[in-house]
Length: 278
Image 1 (tube, helix red, strand yellow):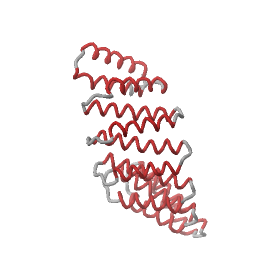
Image 2 (cartoon, rainbow, N blue to C red):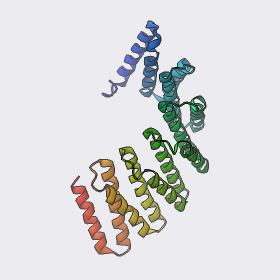
Image 3 (cartoon, rainbow, N blue to C red):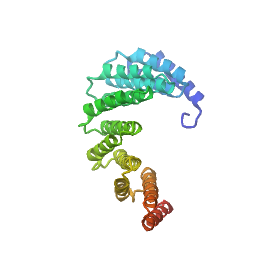
Image 4 (cartoon, rainbow, N blue to C red):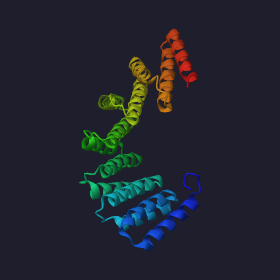
C-alpha cells in the first residue's frame, strides 16, 4: 500500500494492526507496535508525525530490549528530521542531543549508527541556523568519535560528515581548508570497495576539482577531474557516470579558457563518447 502511494489506506492498515496487537497484550508484539508507529509517522503529515513519534518514544523509551531501543532511537532521529523540515532547527538539535544522551554508551551497531546519524543531522541543523563554524565542530566530533570504526554504516556517516564540512568551508570561501578535507576523504576511503563509499570518493574528487577551479587553481582542478575519470570512467552505475560527465564538461570548459582548443576538443569528444555509451 505504501509503495502504491495509497498512504491513507496504509495508515488505516497500520492503525488496525496496532489495535490488534495491543488487544492481544502479548509482550512479544511490542516490537511490532513500535515498528508500526514509526512507519505510520513516516506516512503522515509532518505535524501529525511528530505526535506519533512522541507516542512511540513515550511507550517504549524506558524499555531495555535492544530492538525496542533501536526503534526509539529511529523515532527520535526521524522526529528531529521532521522538525528540521518544518524549520524548527533548534528543536531538532535538542532531539538529536536526546539521542546521544539516551544511547551514547550503547555498544550495538544499530544504536551507534543512530547516534552517528543524530550527530550528522545536528551539524546540518546547525548550518541551517547560520552557525557554520559551530556546525564544523559538530562534524569534527562525529569524525573523532567514529573515524576509526570498521563498520560500513559508521564509515558512511564519517564520510558524510567530512563532505558536509568541506561543502560548508566552500560556502565560507575557505577553499584551501575545503580541499584539505576532500583530501582526507580520499585518504580514508579511496581503497574501499563498498559502493556507498566509492560514490563519496567520486563526489570528493568532483567537488575538490570545482573548489580548486573556483580558487583559480585550474591545473590542479584538471588533475582532480582526471583522477575521477581515470578511476570511475568505466563504471556502469549512473551515480558514477553522472559525476564523470560533469568532470569532463568542467575540464573541457577550463581547457577552452586556457586556450588549449585541441585538448578541449578531445575532452568534449570523450564526453560525447561517455554519454553515447550510457
